[in-house]
Amino acid sequence: MAINEDEESRGQEQIRESLLQDENSPADGEYEPSQKSSQGHHWMVYFSTFVSVCGSFEFGSCAGYSSPTQSAIREDLDLSLAEYSVFGSILTFGAMIGAITSGPIADFIGRKGAMRMSAVLCIAGSFCIYFAEGALALDIGRLATGYGMGVFSYVVPVFIAEIAPKDLRGALTTINQFMICAGVSVAFIVGTVITWRNLALTGLIPCVVLLLGLFLIPESPRWLAKTGREKEFESALQKLRGKDVDISQEATEIQDYIATLEKLPKPKFLELFQRRYLRSVIIGVGLMVCQQFGGINGICFYTGDIFETAGFSSSIGTITYACLQVVVTGIGAAFIDKAGRKPLLLVSATGLVLGCGLAAIAFYMKVHELSLQAVPILAVTGILLYIGAFSIGMGAVPWVVMSEIFPINIKGRAGSLATLVNWFGAWLCSYTFNFLMTWSSYGTFILYGVVNALAILFVIMVVPETKGRTLEQIQAAING
Image (cartoon, rainbow, N blue to C red):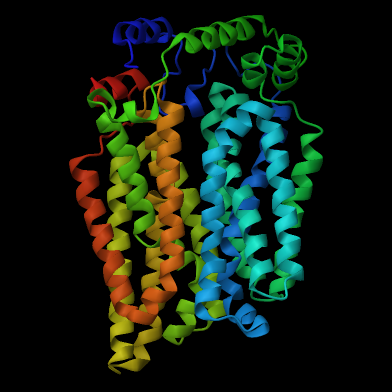
């Protein structure tokens, strides 16, 4: 049934004044009340954020696992290239399923319940990999960790956005992306000095910390309010804001906002493609295509093998890669509200094209035996430029833009669609990478370079700048 546009306009007008007036909008359209959040002590908010981002660290650990372990796993278990490609890429397939189901799960059993379930699956998956004696057990373990990773990718930032006061939310939500990069980097570095089985067990550490921490932190007050648990809602909010803080105004405004939100029409999936929403959907989905089809997961998953193929030390290259990723991600997070979204995307995509170009030249020279002594340094420079460029913008900015451009009544479904496209691209890229490298090493990087060049055109022609504008201004400009 078509959406009643007059009803939708009235509903949005009722909440226009109460929506958050900055770019760092909470996930799923959640509301941040007007009460000054600088009152009271925020130690419980900090602690709750720390506990939840253990899931982000586990996300990164799972993503980074395959890069330093490829040679050892294939040798120990006698896996073919095709079998290892399935193992490497099935993580993203599991994450795709996890991302699709994460919203309903988090709404049904709560944010804490979803994180608890994800941690248990990641622990089970890690043990499967540790005890694996063949491809089947490896794939089952990888699929389980991937599913948990997909749920974490949704529920952790949502939980942080729902518990954090306005003046802290921007800083706290950036910790999610930073911890993902930290998890990847630690896996890269530790994987160079311990066996692949023991590396699988390191994923247990953040999961155990998360499981224990969940007993000590409150559930999201907004989820409790949505489910009608009034006493638990007030108790959780009080615990987060401090026992001496008057939460009555904040509690009332949250409940009023949620009641109004429930009245807004929720379009069906196909209605996302009607004219009034089409541009925002194109922007959100298009940025996810640019992010994933430019090659990031293939290069991230198989970094060690790329360095070895180029004739460079896998250990040194991987450690350098890992350190660079963390530092540049931190820089990008610091500048996103100063430089703007669009400039960071353009700088990032340009760096990706240059990085792919250098790597392509290096592998072309190796194949044709031209200046072989220059091949390793060119390849390493290209890969490091690529990961630095990705970390500064293309890694995080598409998620920020996506959270800003969708009207509140389509945010859930449209966000799920964009997330699905993202994980599908991650799976396809990671699965095909080894086959592409076998086909043509330099051709692989030329292909990725072309995709990133097209991303530059997409950003210039389609993506708006959203810095310094209210959500209403952004959405009116895009969907009006």
